[in-house]
Image (cartoon, rainbow, N blue to C red; front, side, top):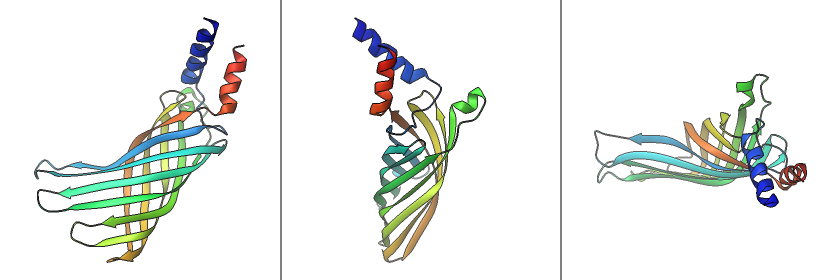
Length: 193
């Protein structure tokens, strides 16, 4: 019974504490969605980009990891499909928390990626090669472990294909789950013993 109480208390402490899980050793896992469009006037026409990511905090506020990008755009029945893809390294830095209670649950951050990317157009054109992106974002921490975010990113691909350079600007929304590292979990456990 004591172990159950300790486990539930630790979970409650991790979930309802005001400070976010962005300390050294913690892990971030989640995804962003962007380029969301469902054309009502054209049957079977839509677009969606999903960007899952995972990172480990190497110091307080600074996470390094990887991300994957997959996007699809259809122009309608029989008109072809455009595919966007990418895999690479990710860096994210969170700024300091604000002073008032609402601001303590929010953080601005900057994110940058570099890796292999491509854009293959339905009409036959393509750009494949070195992909990069960067931009600012904003996270609202619903709990200590769950953040809802918005991210404005400039994406570029430099390489080969029918075009040597492709780029776009995306506004994405998403969520991240912040898991405590071993040090944080041990501290919570020691506090309840």
